[in-house]
Image (cartoon, rainbow, N blue to C red; front, side):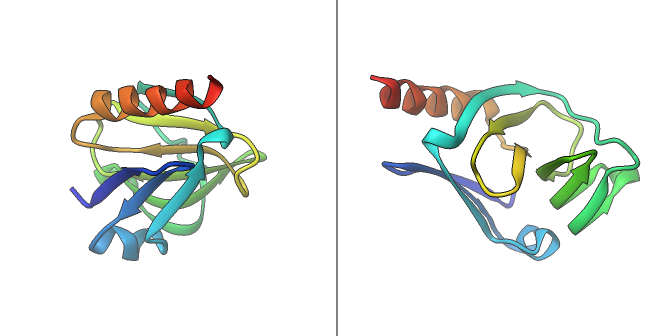
Length: 122
């Protein structure tokens, strides 16, 4: 899988490696913990009329990499399987409202990220 996550002191980093970074036209997202409003695991079926801006999508294979716009909201998607995905709802982080990505162990990533968010509140 071409994704790595890093839990820095002040920010969460989603790094795309290999061909995924080429498809997404981006190699990493640095999201300040303060910008993350919620984190959860759920399935996601991108609407067929979601605009790719820029990025790559092969809907029949469920491959979505990069920036997408639906209505007035921007999404950053990085997934290639129909599995439970990590959903981040963000506020004040550039143009994105949602960052949704696939990880091998989404539960462990969610637990660690929620731990970091709780530490920030204390």
